Image (cartoon, rainbow, N blue to C red; front, side):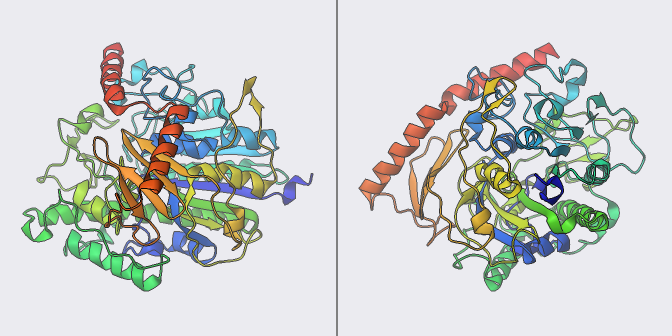
Length: 536
């Protein structure tokens, strides 16, 4: 086999980026480099993730549903293989498959499929043991980044380069820039006659809201009109672009969000969204730098680049005595951080630690309902952008329903690689996704199997044009997603046979997959966190 003719593959994953946060999907945020990949490649409008960072990463890497990969919830071990919190040995990563097929495998960014790590207890971390495998233990030749799920962008509490902890950081350190620089260096080190796979896993724009001052300044005044106006503008732009196969009505402002007109801290709120936009902008700049280097090295034409997000926009509120208490309140050089969403502290610099909160997440997920954690469309929808000049021509937006389990089989087909039935002496589960290469090439493609979702008791099944979905503790809802993807017209009760079939298929999948009742899982999770905290 002539390895030099095989394509390189770059998989770029954004963190907590909402569907509507790109220029290519209607945003006012400047993302010219990602937009160019979409314009000169293909944009899939109906790509689904798994509603949360850990599960999506596990599914993306293995071509299996999160529970089959061992990450049915997050990092805590809840007592079953489906909820062990780290990648199972009967799953194999993209890197493990491609390495066996002659590829050099590179990762830069966020790992987050290796158990729980309490950020304030780094002295107790057991990196590399059975329950905390590193990327190097799961097929990657090189790694630079974080093993847990969140980092301070200017002052990380713990980073690895390969198997060694990074102990010092330059004064101008910024995580998004650093992981891109390292990724470029890794590519430069790869022999010319060996194809490479790069997994570039960003933490942007996940909280905390940290950005370069000059990037924030680019959005000064942009968000003073408020979340209602911005959300409406994005929807109108989408419709004008013919982004979807039909122009659905926008879902109403979330019921927990008050109108912008009644907001008292408008300057602070506008600054939060400006900082978030700056984080997305800087991520796009870094992708542009990577593309320039690929062109310089002669790799661009024969590199398959795919870009997507791990879940919808994040509505989590950064309370001083909530999420914030899990993270260090001083920088590496000893300066005190003002933790939490305090209206008396403008976000953005290294001495702040805030989130952009539900009102702006509602903008990020326009025109859809709900957020990260949920399996209504706002929580699980991401555009997938694919670009490969030697592999397929630019094409119209594609609208078939796809899922992150499809990424691995797509890469295998593109690279001519074989799926490994055994890795490290362990028999590997069969793939659960389908290759998207025909869809990228503008050919007829449709999913043969349903798509299933479950996270924290929120559940759904998508089959053809229909989607059965529920929030934890609530009744099932039924939607014709092709006619009503914003989930405004519940069809429940109108087609008993279809509903019974979808409920039956979901229940059968959940039982086979090991889905745990959330009312059982949640107490185990809280107990696990207490145990891990006590061990620290």
